[in-house]
Length: 394
Ligand SMILES: *Cc1c(COP(=O)(O)O)cnc(C)c1O
Image (tube, rainbow, N blue to C red; front, side, top):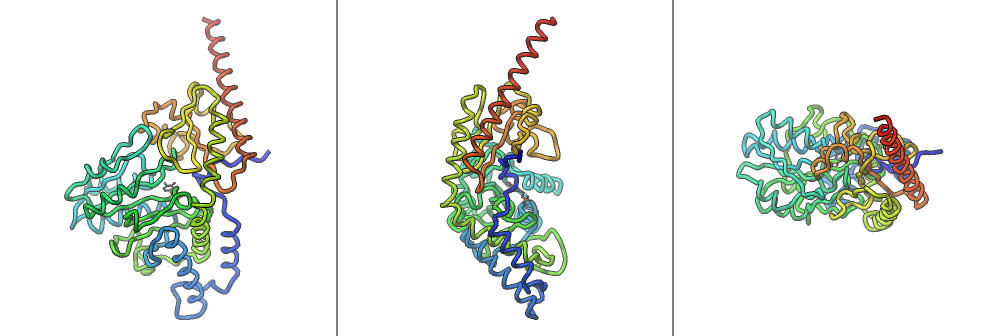
């Protein structure tokens, strides 16, 4: 049997319309180096990239000239945080505000900056995973140069009130960076209305190809950063390197589709998610994480009491999901996000993230619910049988 895919928050399938656009690009006479606009082949590639910048800008209500192409949201987050800090730190201050539940692509550059003499405030969420705009406001200091907050958390799906935080930042004239890797195409993004100065996007989280992303810089608020790499001066020297035309065309198409998807498909995905929850919630001992907060349409995070995390993941074979420990692929530690919500280690480790997407069907939801119910029930039976055995032996 084919595995059922419930891991769209880790990566999405590529939309066939994106594949087609990329294929056309690779086959067309646009193989020139986009930096070589002096001749027709280069100019053709340059045109395609310009068009893709318009598509990205359309999704976020930004300006095409603010689009910087990167390799993905990890690089975008690093460029935003390290780039602002190293460019402005000496002159304007060495304090940054973020939260303990950010993606490691934000936390790790912040740790790096601490070793370079920066002071980082890590805000704590409430028990649902929300960071209050007041806590951001209270954390701001004279020497704060940047606030970095994700729009949607990748593990629990909780939505942060970025418009309110954006207002706090603008009122104090502090730059505001948002990691929108999980929200693009699912929630409305508007860098103007939400007062966002820097925004990270990743194509493979929105039905585009892996290996391409964007850091958007609001041209009215910021135009210089310390680059991470040094080379041929591409993209105003902010991120040098020959632009991958076909990847960029793919991301552009993914953004154009995503813009329509916010309204057209989020409701259906949310309904499927609620069906999934109602079909598994008949089991005792389940905790739905962020149950009392707004969450993005596709993510359902469930902590399962009285089963062991690793056994649960094994029992769910056939179902592609994430666990509360595997999210931080490099380590076996219990998720720091779930611990921040107050879940103790064993409950964090027996947490399953289902993430639904554009191609999830009602049939798959029913199958996944059945697999999950059977797995949990069997594991608990096994545990109670073992308890009996042990009792008799004693
Ligand atoms: C996936 C993800 C990233 C990393 O994106 P890549 O394009 O895979 O490097 C960063 N932040 C969040 C919130 C993510 O979900």
